[in-house]
Length: 256
Image 1 (tube, rainbow, N blue to C red):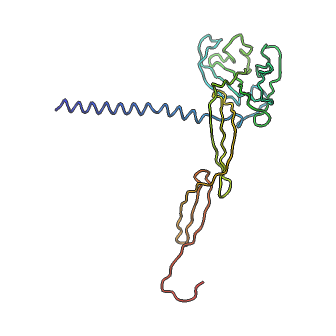
Image 2 (cartoon, rainbow, N blue to C red; image 1 turned 180 degrees about the vertical axis):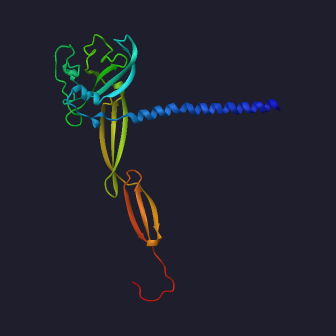
């Protein structure tokens, strides 16, 4: 009897441990997925301008921390990596006419050209390339990865291709009230580079009837009911007052 008793307890304990382990194992997946979905935003919608070219790129950069081989330290170190989508007035990357660095220096490291810079959403569009630089957190060297590169130790950005393999599809919608019957659903969908968040997308809008949810506030003291209607999608509110009917028994005489 004792052996069966302890065996039953052991089986129950093992079952509990397995269940807890499975539940805990699910949390990282949910957390990673939520972080990935919530992290995206279009830099063009939040662009900040500055008088200095590098300062402007710094303010609008996506910054990540990555382990890379620093050419100065001579070993793998933690490196801050800055990436910014390239926006030009022509819509074509500056690399097409030989410009490789954000100060206009060309591929040969000597001559200078036009970076064709502009303000996204105003007079410039995303080219499918991005500006990038890196900073070693140990020695502080800017562009610390390749010692023979023109950018080594110099505070400039280099141009890199946002390859098709880096693109992530997305779709997001916003809902805003239009009138008492409809709200506007605006959907932005396309693809973005998972490194710099440069976005190729189209935007569509349509009118959709409100999805009202009603709540009734009985105000018996005032002989009325207030019906509160709220759209569950856009938050549009409207109220209607309904007068309560009263019945008076055994009354004879004038009535207004």
